Length: 345
Ligand code: SAH
Image (cartoon, rainbow, N blue to C red):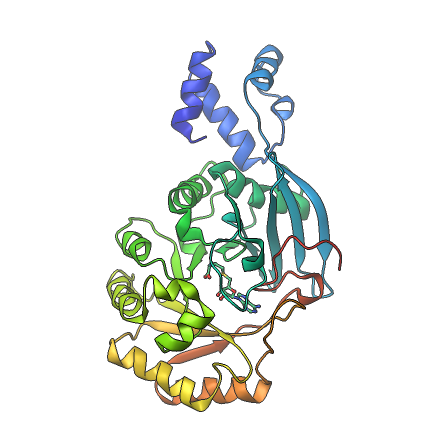
């Protein structure tokens, strides 16, 4: 619930409006997980609330910790659908990777989440609660959100096919008397839902954007990412160009490029990518190269480190900033493209 809805609820229960602020603070800033823990509310009101409303809709089924400190949380919604969230510690800051859908309707050929199909769109609460659960696990309830916590909407699902809930959840999380994770600390990733990229460009207080590209020609992209048949590279580059115009001072956006051995990682592919950016005059972008994370059901191999380096060098020689993303949590199926409600590891 947003603040408005909370106010309506407390007023409808015959309580003064300011109770809504107390509840909001307790649930979001203090990250309390039940009404009973909100001890600044009268006990009788806590009991009424508990009968009328719920704090939590997610339960943690299992938690896996990688040798590199990454944690993967396998959760379940109240209606039994899997949700996965990943905690990625790096020196000096934390990143939490959340999911926007249970499963995913897109059929990217190299991604394990795709094999689940779409199970459901997550609600606003189910998105926010993932972050609350992770922060409580790492820092305990009651502690303030550590300064510098980053969020990435790069877990399971296509965030831009659950756009309204995504944006509402980000608004709730940005609230100063809540989690206080501002949009500047958030990046959302899309496989290329063109109309929603347009909408995001026009949104005040928007998060940063990443677009998963992974191929620089339609023939290959159609095969790797079938969403390309709905919105092709021409449409995607045009909207990316439009998005570029909405960038703030010093801001850039990102193209993600999964590196698939022998498939999209040749010198020719790198040149084609640089050509594409040149053709559409896209400049304020960086390319994140993601070595493919394997799984038994996937028919792809990661590019060799030499191929990745060559690809990066070619992009840079053509004036395109390129970075190689270090895989995190591969051993516990927590890395990009590995979230498939897998138990074990
Ligand atoms: N659906 C959105 C959000 C998911 S982000 C999107 O596609 O952008 C997850 C990122 O991991 C995407 O860039 C995706 O292309 C990448 N990815 C998918 N499977 C992968 C794999 N097996 N190895 C490495 N990266 C993968």
